[in-house]
Length: 125
Image (cartoon, rainbow, N blue to C red):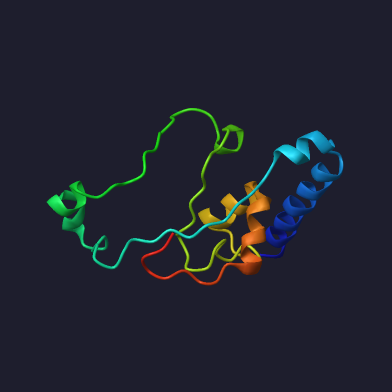
């Protein structure tokens, strides 16, 4: 829908307007990094039984916290994972408007990854 495209563009333009009005101290404190993570070849994570197997219990999985209140944008050091589409951001630059695209519109700084991150493989996030 054309109106959706206009709203998406307004989100991105608003992001740049906020940046223009930001102080140097604020801008110096902000950063975005990109990295690829994958399940190693010997792990069969796509198999439902993997998560209950002894093999999974022996793996060193990263620690994480789940918070029931607040928003990810307000959290210090928060991580955002993207794995809904093999291309980072899904169709955010092509008019898509599903959950992944909305996530990228809420955090437009993530769109930089759309420019240089190649398509993910089935074992990556």
